[in-house]
Length: 404
Image (spheres, rainbow, N blue to C red):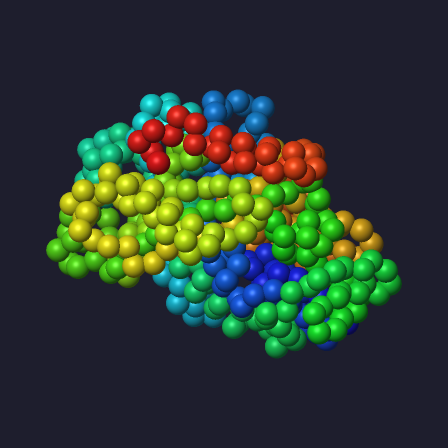
């Protein structure tokens, strides 16, 4: 087998598509341990970031590093936009950007930092005061906000399923096929529950699950997030939500709530994060987290306190100790990309595309940008890893206040 890609999320789908284009006479096998859409790429709030938020006061010496990350984000956005159009993917794609909100003292301070950063980087944006935020979204909670026009909103599971359905004919997708072990060699052997696959070149697009296969051990962990969304709102209920008919708000506090008003008229809210070894929450645990979701929802929209949640979900994001990403060759003929720290929709797409070119010996500005990621900090072994991971994830909620 010439090529095997493990992981059919956004990175793996982008990689498989590009490999198939570059090597039209080769079969590309794309494996996923679950059904497409059940992994992290289908379990997020649906934000494709164009301009990353880097907390803290802006420093001029950081400009090139920030520019590099944003260039990668933009490539991913452009790739997704073209694929959605060419494949006619119905995923509620809205490329009008989204908002960053501030409700409490810590995030209000960060609002100024973010504005300074956007001005220094020459990023088009609009700043909003309390009244403007209330007029736009029908909530009086936010004291300030910023609209950044580079970014998109979508239904993530519909996006990845559409991309999977639109893969080139020389891509063979095999779902519900977990890889149990990777044996390095020539060829590389993948051990499966029902046999094995041998391949000349292997791409790992497994994000936070890479350590299970022996890669990025003590470099990458999974943080489990959870959220809920309402039933479809009535026209009268929607009329209480301000002038914007569809929108997304990311808190300027790292532990703050993420909110969406979707095109089909639901409010989606995500506001918990915890370390559980990269596992999804059980039904019982998810029900318990909905208490926090509910409090956050009613704090923002007391006029909708009667509206029930219809669904809840959890998902896992891959995070590193210093917020870096992973891209490149891990060992002979084995390549890997992952660790997006919550920005995997656009960045993961760009990394997958670039990794396909890099694995085939290509060179480009995008590959150079992806290779420019800082080295990840080392994480201690278990049980110290578990303690440290729990502390790191819980630290994001320090001084979150009203933003949660």
